[in-house]
Image 1: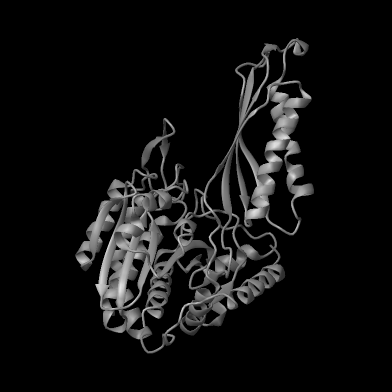
Image 2 (image 1 turned 180 degrees about the horizontal axis):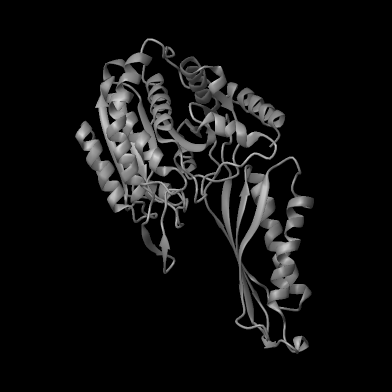
Length: 443
């Protein structure tokens, strides 16, 4: 999205929210008097947290398999004095700390890693493997969840070290299987908010390819809706030299891959975000055989519900039309809804950004465009919890500046096998900002 359009969208979202009911805010926290104490606490805990970070990085686990990871976090939270319940949503955990009368504030981290090989060359690089879709796969924390977990632990420790400065209940949630956008639903289905109460506010952060020491924010939609596409075209098998004797599903599927982009370029409002990507095309066994079916797998992304609906309708209509043109049976079309867009509460964002700027300086707290990736933190928000999801920079500012120059070497983004945050400054900014954000709503 063009920066000017992003700013306009945020302004409109903020204006709309001004007319809606908003929380009765208490006085804003002034970070300057408490920054020295907070930074001292963060500095003291960092050596131990660095060890935890390297351990988590070296021992990643896939979604709903995070038994070692969850057990490690549970043990650390119990040491701090939290009441810890494990096994929520299979491998998730909830840690509660009560400190007088006040709001309940949820802080979420993710537990899972990705089925991919790490190529960073770090001394603590992952060499782990696990079963994924019936095959052995490398596993790596190439999305930064290891840093999220470490910052989560550090925030819990910092808040307890300053518990004379806030009142209320901390609800620290470690969620499984974010990468499959199913872990949040699993925790909710297991009674997360029924057993522990619905929080008054929720926060989460995510690492991104920004300079460390900086945070990025969005008021309104921050991530995309995510849906999956699974289409099977049915034909009639034949010899490759006799296409007239069969009905070619490869031809139908191939036409669909191209023609479905017309839904994006000619049916969707060009000012609105929408993507359809076919990532898997499976058909046939030999070059001289026309197979009897072709299966496509893909992903659908959008920000707005009306765009989402239009794209689903267009995809199904296009698939049926391709089959009809070939005189083939109707295809099997499965469009499965995944996660919804993360929509930040504009009032909470405004208040928290003001705090962040007072703590980090205006130049280090910047508005960013919504990202096209997806996140199931939205499932918690959709339960009616005012929330903020923000981005944490991870790279040396000089390297970021060099990468932005013409011909500069691009920095690895999340899900790259080379993604490697700079641990110390990333951790320290993550803990400082999250601790302040939580304290700000617990005055």
